Image 1 (cartoon, one colour):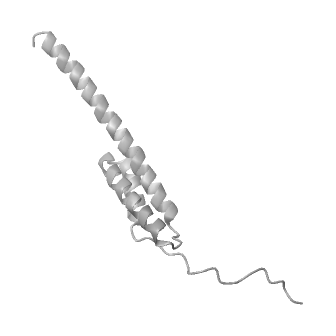
Image 2 (cartoon, one colour):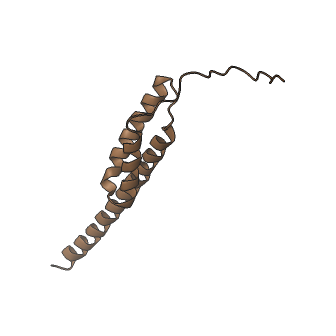
Length: 103
């Protein structure tokens, strides 16, 4: 009994692992959970890593990890900017009220 040939058994080089993939994911998760200041670092490192992956032409097995860390960094950075903006508005309102009341 012979089996049908469904194509070549060789599909190219094995997938590679980007060396910063785990670091980017950890920074992205930590930026959401613990310290939002890590968000821009995860965003920047993720963008650079994705650019390296796209320009290399090779298949990377941890591209999803890099994308997830980058997205977590983007979300964390946006939340951090919104919170800092909210604090600035509240500070200006309280400061303006204090100045107009003669304190």
